[in-house]
Image (tube, rainbow over all chains, first blue to last red):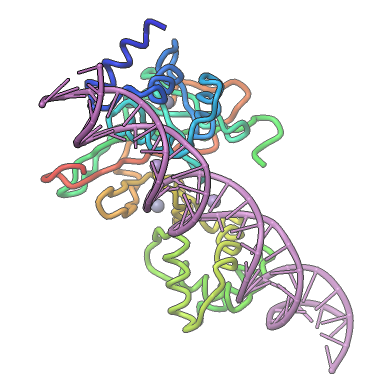
Amino acid sequence: MSKNCNFIEKLREVGLRPTKQRLNMCEVLFNREKTFHFTINDLVQMISEKMNQKISLATVYNTVHAFEKKGYLKEISIDSHKSYFDTNTSAHHHFFDEDTHELIDCDANDIEPVNIKKNITGKKINSVEVLIKVASDNQNQK
Amino acid sequence: MSKNCNFIEKLREVGLRPTKQRLNMCEVLFNREKTFHFTINDLVQMISEKMNQKISLATVYNTVHAFEKKGYLKEISIDSHKSYFDTNTSAHHHFFDEDTHELIDCDANDIEPVNIKKNITGKKINSVEVLIKVASDNQNQK
DNA sequence: TCAATAGTTTAGAATTATTATAATGTAGCT
DNA sequence: AGCTACATTATAATAATTCTAAACTATTGA
Ligand SMILES: [Mn+2]
Ligand SMILES: [Mn+2]
Ligand SMILES: [Zn+2]
Ligand SMILES: [Zn+2]
């Protein structure tokens, strides 16, 4: 519960008001040992449980996007018509389990740096992301 | 127009009936020098122009997915809530221009093979895709 | 302390992409 | 030509996301 102060400051620093919804969201998102991946629906569920009351979907969308813009969250692109977000905002790559729809971080040692030899004139590279899709080995990809 | 025969055979080979919609779709998709990327809406537009009449959205979705399942098309994952498809079905990587929302193929020499050192037990790798997001160099990423 | 203000949350409507339904149409075979 | 299986279509349904406008709240400064 003392983490709360940190979150208040954190939010203030970037010009977001520390409302109870945002503080609860911060707890759920950032007050934990390891980073994790989630969908909006996952998050709504988790926050509702924590607050013991409903939170508006619109608020979750708005706040997630506010956090994303501030660099607290990253959106991950997967072949799906659903958005996945990541509390790990460092540049990193992913395995995506097509059986379970689970995202798994690669850490630095899992993949050698991607060596890009081409550049698009007038454009700079904003990000380089590798997505490795995996599926059950025995009874193969359905 | 002589390509038509090829497409009829191509469709027959995989058990799809060569209807006029599918033949037109084949022309638009495959009767060209270079492979390309498209969204469903792009494609509806192109086919309607070619046929000089409307084609049902449902047919385009169904047929694109039929083609995808047969391996004639590939779906590309991008940070967007829209699906992009690719007539280049070989394993390859992409640049995505965040200004224009244009996808650009990398060819084999543009990126060194991605070296993956970790494996998920019980899972096999189905695909490895690199997405490089680029944006205008001067007045930076908005 | 407390009202004014700017920013926030909310329910619900709107929008967009995608998929399902069920009636009608057509290709392929006889 | 006529049968049958498969395809196409218009339309409705679903799902994710965004918009709207009214109600609410944190912050500021009188
Ligand atoms: Mn998004
Ligand atoms: Mn799809
Ligand atoms: Zn991650
Ligand atoms: Zn491509």
